[in-house]
Length: 104
Image 1 (cartoon, one colour):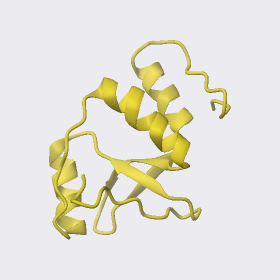
Image 2: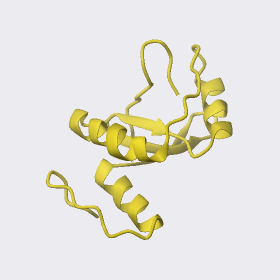
Image 3: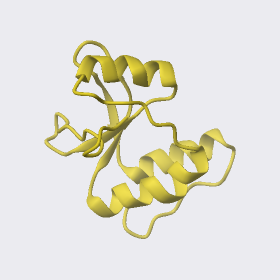
């Protein structure tokens, strides 16, 4: 989700910033309604997320929030390498190897 200035990237409990993503438009709309401030849902194709968005997040030092829920929008956040490894596993591919970050 985003507005005219970009996407929200709140601090996690560890003090690091995470950019949240949702697995469905319905979940993202619910989160946009909770956060308010004119946020709109933007769909991203999986391959673009994987090859463009995630590497950019890694370069900028962000973590990845996955499907945050509830009235305070809380949930899991992972490093980019962790997300790419989980995605590779789900797609039955080999583990992702990143020169900058050891896979978990």
